Amino acid sequence: MKGIFLSAVVLTLLVGCASTHTYDFLVTNRDCNCSTYTVKDKENRITYEFTATYSLDNSMLTTITMKVVNGSHKVLSFDLARVRVSSERFEYRYNNKFVPFNPLKIGPEEEQEIVLVGQAEVKDSDEWLRIAGEKMVVTIRGIRLGDTEMHIEDLEFVPVNPKLPEG
Image 1 (cartoon, one colour):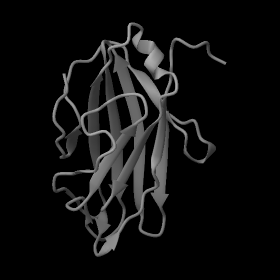
Image 2 (cartoon, one colour; image 1 turned 60 degrees about the horizontal axis):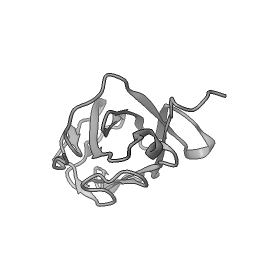
Image 3 (cartoon, helix red, strand yellow; image 1 turned 180 degrees about the vertical axis):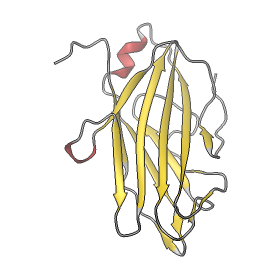
């Protein structure tokens, strides 16, 4: 069942149930295979920390967490910000479309956690086959620090597949 896309401090892509087992996504930017990926804007003193997990139980339930630390002396605004999640193997309702955040302001020397949750049905007889080759790209635009638009690189997420041997 596909849900609706909402944006807020908790941004929900699609709503649904989760299995009891969750697995990590790895961010593959800059030759990294990291379960936690940090982007630092040293000039503006803004830090973004990203993590993502998923569960697979007749549907793909994905959770992306973005911790934002505003170390500047200005307000960081998400009022005009928007996010796009593009999945290669799963058909989320708003896949590859920009969706606005609800208005959110992070004051000077404050931090906020933003959570994106998405669900997509899996109709394959072996739902784990769909994990192979999956890549999810998260694009965020329109975050403003005062009058300046902030730039965050697109983030590429690849799911850890527990069915594959480690090594």
